[in-house]
Length: 146
Image 1 (cartoon, rainbow, N blue to C red):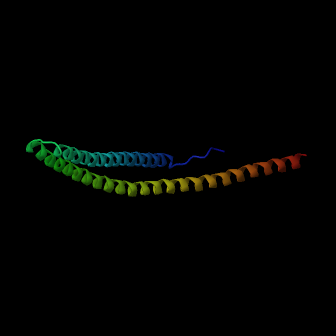
Image 2: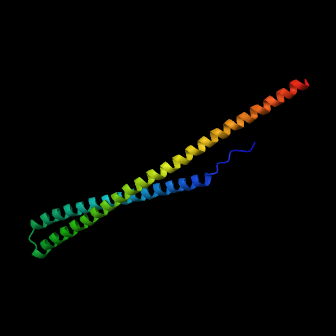
Image 3: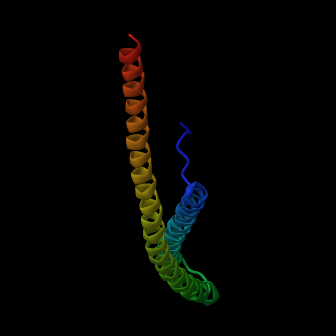
């Protein structure tokens, strides 16, 4: 008897490839989200360091230009944080979209795998039935000849 041949095997491979691709894309998004979160933390630390430096300079006698610099510096860092927070929101939306897409892809793979399992089970039943028939034929022939 011929071996089991699943006719949708190429489609299953394509769906598995799509699922793996989506998982990789989600990994990239998570990596970008982590980098953005780290950037925001670093910017907040820069602001804190600027305030500490400003307090240190205030205790010393220095010119007004240096003191004004801190205000512009902190404002620039806050604006950069806003940009990074917007970027984080975009990444979260992309992550949610990819999650939905991945769930659908995983469902598609599962459907095809279930079809494959059912077809293989049917193949195995038919194969076992055919073997049993051959054994019965051999026994019948042996009893007739023997």
